[in-house]
Image (cartoon, rainbow, N blue to C red; front, side, top):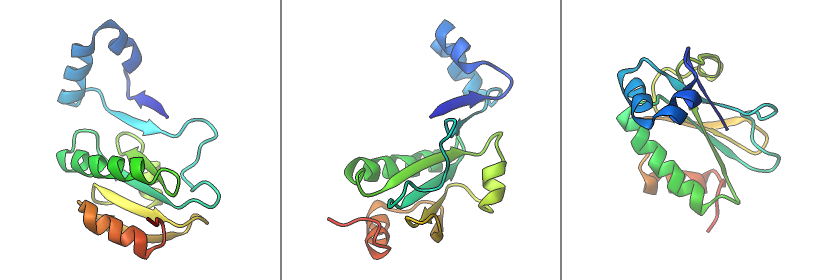
Length: 139
């Protein structure tokens, strides 16, 4: 994944000093998002369902949901793809998927069709139940 930042070269700041980069992020002067690498799309890999997590970098609820999804991703890596998209400043994907509230999880089946969506925190146990119901994962 490629990390891009608005108006400022984040990697240049990070190389010079970690603390100023954190201060800029915390104050909102520097806004970063994850952008798909060239050639990478948000459609699922062939035969693999995908969850796209839409969030904001400084949102505490989003961070909580991200931790849950990272746990699920680690356990079911071979069955499921999980991708993270951050709102600022790239609005294109948020508009394309009609995202109003963060965090929002969009569930795409292996063909790329949206089959479910959740807004807000999705507790891990309930998320796993839904993934099994959608046949995204199996134990």
